[in-house]
Every structure is written in C-alpha cells, then in structure tokens.
Length: 209
Image 1 (tube, one colour):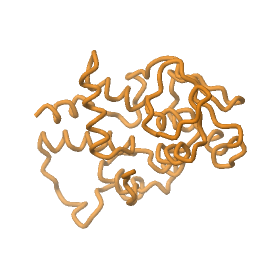
Image 2 (cartoon, one colour):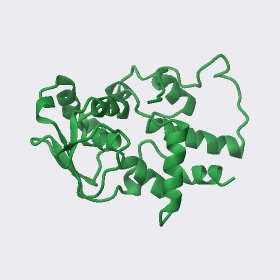
Image 3 (cartoon, rainbow, N blue to C red):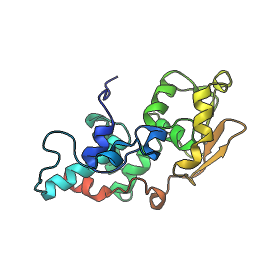
C-alpha cells in the first residue's frame, strides 16, 4: 500500500494550517506551525505570487493531506462524490468522513488518522461484529464500529480515549465509551466539519478544468 512516509509537520507548515497529523502534539507549544509559522525550505520566507490555480491546488492538498490520502485515492473519492446526488464538494467531505480510519479517529480510539490507519491494518477493529482491516472501508449509517476485546487493554488506545475531548466532537457518531464501540447514527454534518476549515468548492473548480 502506497503511503507518505516523510515528515508530517512540514505538511502543516506548507499549508499554513494545522492539519492535526501528529495527534496530541498539535495541541501543544511543540507544534511546528507554532514555532515556525512559514513554509518549509530555503524560500519559505519569500514572497509567493498566488494565482487562482494555486489557491485551488493548495485547498486540494490541504484536504488530501488532512485525510492522509495520496492523489489517486483522493481523485477516486472525488469521482464517486461527483456521481452522487447533491453538492459535489459536500459529498466529497461526507465520503472522507465515512472512511473507517476517519470514523475510528472521530470516536477517539486514535490520536490521529494516521494512527487510526495503523490500528485498523493490525486488525484491532470490527464493523458489525466482523473484522475489517481496510482503512478506506466506507461505514454506513447504522453500522457499529467496535474495538476487539483482546485490544481493549492497549495503553495507547486508552490514552487516546482519555484525551478525546481535545479533538472536535462529531454529532453524527454515538459513542459507547464503556463498551469500546460507536455507531454512525447519521451522515456527517458539513456545518460541523470546521477543523481545519475547508473550502471544498475550490477543489470542485480545480477538477472541473
């Protein structure tokens, strides 16, 4: 499985926005964006001429990097959103939020989406009682995502659950902390996806060219 293996803090600096890629570290003074609030590289302090295309590209990169996807994965999700009824940009974000790694992250089992992907790949989660190890699995309304019984004593998962109140809550998920499970009770709500702030219409304009 192809994936980005480089330093993730430089991605936040490049997008000039916190993408919350390193979990709890992003909420502390150690956050790279707090310490070096400029783009990485020797020309990070230089002036950059911003074009319409550049603005659209940066927005696409910000969303893609927030959800830890590569270009082909992101484009496939966009194509699926475009075929759905409704507003394409909103459909895109809803599909991204319904990915199993995003749901696990929203439930608080992982401090970041990258960490959620690792836990899913190591078969720690079940959907409706069946083991699922595919991070891109699309969770449906009414599905129950639970932590396997053998995994409930893992310290890192319990630490993440204890610190979940730091992260943005999701009203579309009903969490049962004692049962180590949660239910996707409704489709994700666009108005509540505010961290980081996305302008998904710019992505639609970019792919429409």
